[in-house]
Amino acid sequence: EWTGHTGKRIRNVVNIGIGGSDLGPAMAYEVLRSFTDRDLTVRFVSNVDGADLHEATRDLDPAETLFIIASKTFTTVETITNATSARTWLLAALDDPAAVARHFVALSTNAEKVAGFGIDPDNMFEFWDWVGGRYSYDSAIGLSLMIAIGPDRFREMLDGFRLVDDHFRTAPAEANAPLLLGLLGIWYGNFHDAQSHAVLPYSHYLSRFTAYLQQLDMESNGKSVQRNGDPVEWQTGPVVWGTPGTNGQHAYYQLIHQGTKLIPADFIGFAEPVAELSGELKAQHDLLMANFFAQTQALAFGKTADEVRAEGVPEELVAHKTFQGDRPTTTILARELTPSVLGQLVALYEHKVFVQGAVWNIDSFDQWGVELGKVLAKRVEPALTEGADVPGLDPSTTALVAAYRTLKNASEN
Image (cartoon, rainbow, N blue to C red; front, side, top):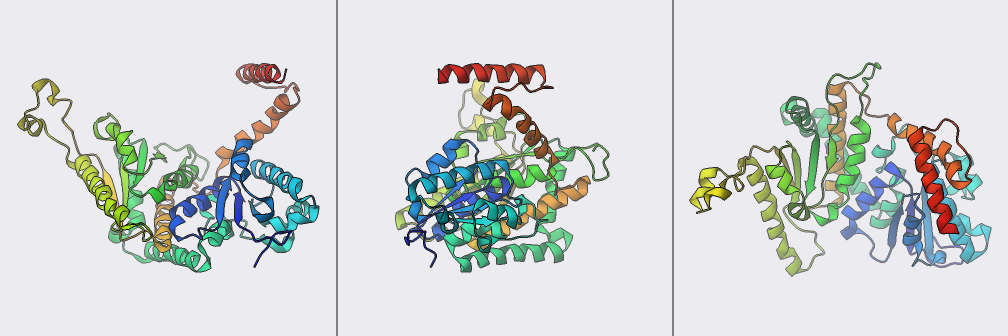
């Protein structure tokens, strides 16, 4: 059993990462929360905003807390900044630099940087350097999840990945789920001008699933250059968005039903609720799924003006209560939410993204659009922290930095 520096049992695990080193494990933890060790507190920190780390640690005992630092290169600015602040928080309580080795582990490929931070390289979990972050949570990056659900259930999840991997590799085109999902997206986007794609899971446990898919899809296929360097001459990746049902029904479904934009939507549902719910709470599942099926029916078939009139609706309201229908949806229905099913869902969307990238002739495995902002942030930071002048800034950014300085100085004085 792993214990902390003082001999206390580890009761809290805080994963520090960003992008794929955070979104995947955090999503999977929420999805599989009903399978987790409820005596263990697991939290995720990603934002360089210090409030994120503060809220994650404010009620934790440092002597019972393990930090998992997830960074392939161990140079990611946001992650190392948060890790350094976490180390300061730990040492303020335990007052012994040797404590770092018992309260920090690393998920990385850079043993030298890990050791320099104070983490024992024996406690560094490696993975291949060619694995992109958004495709990595089923590697060592998923350590926080494996601690929470246990190795057996983690393997069940990996088995789910393998099932869909094998299906994608061997199933004929007309029955190949990732291929069909990818081609449907191309049909809607390239032939019907759909600019976005909604993913609407009817499960509270999938509350972070769409946020995970946002990175998987938009970072992979948000490209305007072909693999040979030529500009693309067609639409590529859509904006991916959505929240769990039934919440979205009372927020933005109005636009999907009666707006002027075509928004294809994936509805994800389950025949059975999670096992740990009480009988009364389980009974609510049928109501949840009644909404699930009602929405896909309404989007597909709508409601004609004659049907509205037949209900005795005043003529001046008929147009407002008419639904055009013919709004595209894809229904994904499983028996219940399990680790294996999560693996299958993620692999389904991974391969869908690959299919679309191949058809659009773009590289789904780079993310150069992320790099420019990082470079510019390094240039701007001295102007904010030291008040230094930064040559070459455009007039708009120069004015904004000046306004920031004025507000900052006023608050300090």
